[in-house]
Length: 258
Ligand code: FE2
Image (tube, rainbow, N blue to C red):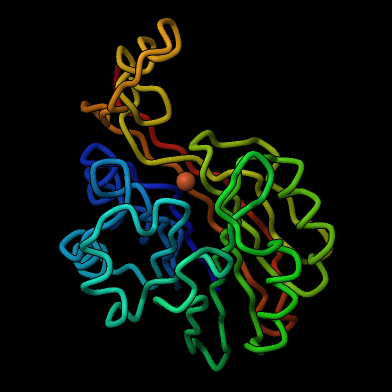
């Protein structure tokens, strides 16, 4: 079974890059399951009902989120009915939305989990480690996929070593920069960060000039989302359905012509 995970889709450029390439990727990698991180898909912060629906229409099985899950008020109008959406399990408000999405495929129960990191981030209500321990107990599955939404590579690598024997796929999100450390460690596919779908000429998806203004003058800026041709980032993980473990992970990055 091949699982395609597409990294943080940022604004219009990211949505276009994803929608323009998804059919081709699905065929090329014979994808059985498609997961996207959509927490930056609406103007860089949050997700709307319309965008969520466009992902479903494109064949997405699960949409994961992150620290911007509740940045748009629209989310509260549809999150309870958004069956394909997973929100971080260790972030307020805890009673809204679902912390796990379980999909039955080829006779397997596949659980998709979403957690927030604690290092250099301040929104986690509980350690992602203790939260994951609880989730593993509460939601028994054959295949466990974790979107670890965190800033620090060290925290994500430590998480992988702690859970690698009980989890089959851990994909880091949030930094928007794809790391080159993809590996399969004892049957667990891992990458510290899968990277983003967003404007290629940008600072992690944001407008370059505004970001520079903020850095150089300390002025408050709106961090407008950058426009222009988008890049796409993702990974494909192959799962051995008999062994119920990961056997390979491959990075994908598509950049616009310059
Ligand atoms: Fe994020």
